[in-house]
Image (cartoon, rainbow, N blue to C red; front, side, top):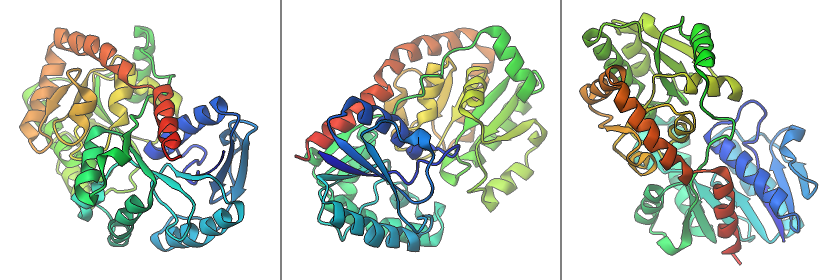
Length: 373
């Protein structure tokens, strides 16, 4: 087979959720299926590290698709043109965007439909684009892969796509994410938190990540529990809204909040593995990769009781209502006070994490590809 792949989110040192999904699954699929030829479509100069094997041909198409108008031009003109020319067996799109103009069989990966549930969390033009085009992409696709049973049911319900056309492909976690020795944890805390214990948030600083309630809960925790514990925030401030900023500025203990920005995989591994707990209390997630990364690092997890997060966490995390500041704060208190609870959660996470690996993800995505024929 010849498979053309949308790889525009494979950008060196800028991989995020969908980018990591693309990287980890495509690296394995291309190496494990060398009898097939893959054409990777980039929208800018690519790094050679993304050409995973000799059965890949990279092509750069302009313009760089980083805006709704440019999404349209790239997919409906540039991608459509190359698909017409190459006539491949399949177009695979790990970020869900398709070329509606193309007649080539297409498989889309939908990670979530957050824009349907919380449209105001996105800029006006972005949400208009998503809400107009993604139902069309869903109908055009020969199959849809998605990252949780929650998202599968959501796509079925909102877009009236038969469940038989939707495959669940869970995310995995980077193999470098492993527990640290105590001396390594001490060194990490010295570097990032002034040698203090810390709760950790990892992700884009987006409204749906619920930083406003996390900040309020941390303030509550500090008021009710006398400690030097910090809150580390890892991620870019791309979506740093007025509400998030005002909540932070009004915090009583904002000096105990440490912003680390974006970290390398090596540094992020150390920061996750040295945390008192991951506090990942989003109010909408298609999957929630940091939860699994924390499991791999033997770090306790506090997460939400909504969308996909209970499905991913199972019984291996403290589950809270993300809209309840008191529940988040109480969970932080339990983690800080109860070493037995932390040990119990870690034991359960060592069982739960076995459900999630990038090898399993790549196998399931390949099975979805094969169902298109």
